[in-house]
Length: 256
Image 1 (cartoon, rainbow, N blue to C red):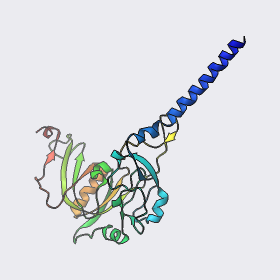
Image 2: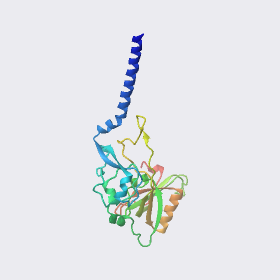
Image 3: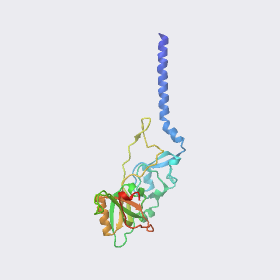
Image 4: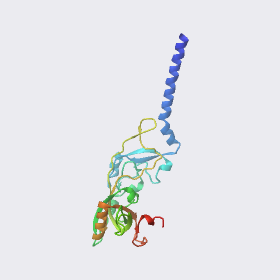
């Protein structure tokens, strides 16, 4: 009787010890995975930061994370110790690494905040997702091409066909604003607890961008119409970019 009791207690003890070992292993899995990828301390944005925010205020909205070296931008910052007196050059959104180019002198921000509107043109604004705006890599003073796509119409002889055209060339961007984003909720990790995104994943740009451009009255009407009833896509089109002439793209043209 005693031997069976001792054997039962031993079995229970072994089960408890095994459960503790498994739990400890799972808890350290994420940390071991990062350690095997040569981790680097990087400042990551945790709260939305508006353009022009001083470094002293930015400190409360960023946190240090260990990320694999291969996933860290070359100019990513691990500390703000050498950035005193600077401000954020653009709006910063949660999840992105804080890179050196995002912090500039206050006087530089004033000079790049907007571009002067050429005489005879007017400004119009519209909102697009990052993938439609060269990944959000636009700044005042850049020039863009405006593509307009329609599900139906665009050609009177074939009103049912989908069409796309580079409708407006070399449009001057006068202002760029990024919509602030709420802080994402923590995602559950493999061990069941709360945690951030996989450190091996590179953050993609999030949030819509509000663009203001300088155009003629006719082109302003095209942009407003396309914003209301069609779709807009932009390309970065410098002043020396080649112009192949007006061409309307249709289904039958894709494989030509």
